[in-house]
Image 1 (cartoon, one colour):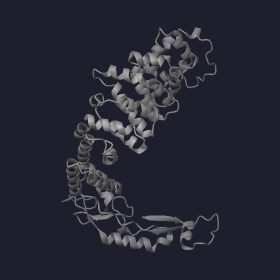
Image 2 (cartoon, one colour):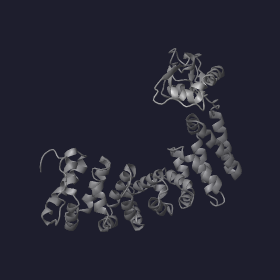
Image 3 (cartoon, one colour):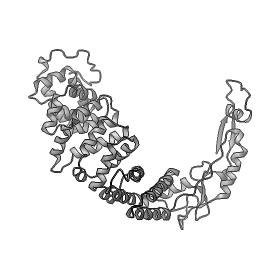
Image 4 (cartoon, one colour):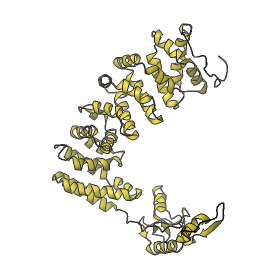
Length: 435
């Protein structure tokens, strides 16, 4: 393999303080020795390891090869007797020495890799965490959780090893144990566990069951109402993993979710809260109606419309989805009709965000602009919805969206003569044929 290094970079390293002539495009080519390259990627190895066949690979490359379901050596094509990988320190030191010798050409020395964590170490640490939690030893538990977090920061391989070996369930049990006491007293350990669990998502069914207790969810809600931005975000991300049945049983969940949407601390937490609310209002359980009513009473409709004004794609899709579901209940539909932002905001999002957003938008308009609501239909006409619905049918959409858009056009067509001032500057160039 050949790496190219520009003359400017070469002389900046080799002759510091000397000016270079401008406009030069001379390149110096440096060949990497073949035995320094990984046979899989052909890149210079950073963490060389030897497998059972005696061939040396870069650790990250051979691990991805094995995780893809391969059970043979990429070079020899023979079956691997074991998946144990032995660090090849000799090759690694040779590579490092070669990098040092060629540092004048801008080649940086590869760092000495850390020894990856083993399944035994993870399992042993998880056992110690559970023991410390059961004994109420907060300090010991904090120390062990931070150890796991430090392992996870070292490499993606460590993260996978930690997750695969049951760390999430152990931390969930520890979180549940400490949440039963006074939260203010155990805030440090609960915060540490919360931060670790967020990058172990999605949780297993057992993990969701453990964290679905009233005490655990109440603890998450307490953190969401706190002042630490990172902790609030972590709590929102973890709450998204909980089942609907567990969320509706806990007090303060709805209030915390609406407040987080109203005053978001970040894009990821905002999306998580909207996803949780969508799960609540779109559930098939018997208390769906009461859930929608409670959220509407907390001002969810106006909050959603304010968020939609300048929302990014992911947020916009989720917010429109929630608004569509909320309009299924009588109170939600009434609030949507009475809010001055509903029509202009929803119509503006048609054809401008994504197919999913347009689908939700048409559904909201179909519910709000009922054929009996002549005033709403005229107002929608004045905002140019007729043109947008025609274009939507032309470019294509889902069958359900198509039916609602067609019905809307029929209602709107009957009110066109009553519209005082329809925008005459509408651009119909996207239509395939004149209407």
